[in-house]
Image (cartoon, each protein chain N blue to C red):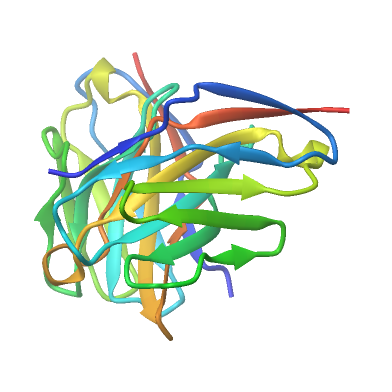
Length: 117
Length: 114
């Protein structure tokens, strides 16, 4: 069974600083995908970034990067130059091997990020 | 191009009432999903449909049924609502293209069961 752990219930960061949100996962599979989503107070789920287990380079999408450490089974999200609009709940999720799951995601509990001016 | 749409946005039910949550996508994706999100928690998979004509149970299927009406539409039915089904329900689709995966979510349906 897969498991996603986000150990930081809440994080605070000063505007324009960088912040790292932690995510560890547990799987015995070799092929999997890792996702980060942002959920603002309005409630929608916004896709941020994806990392495949076989990708050798860390994924980046604008101010978002994923620090993927396969041996440690961690997939931390780094947000550079934080903005007030980054204040939201952030979820880490893992997709099971494609051959069996067709894209089913398992989510962590989330981290609430608050950006201070 | 609306992406993933869900209706209704909000619903209040009394215990024992039934209702159907509707989901439609215009991205021509094969796979569709229903998740629920309880307060302060991550999403949990209720049911999914890998392709038109197939449906399978997820982590928390009890109390729900689904129908994959066609490639575009995937509905979730509560036959006899219970207060424990008070939640926010998200529909999603999944695509894998060019070595990259993305799961797109609808805006959600907030359901309150009294």
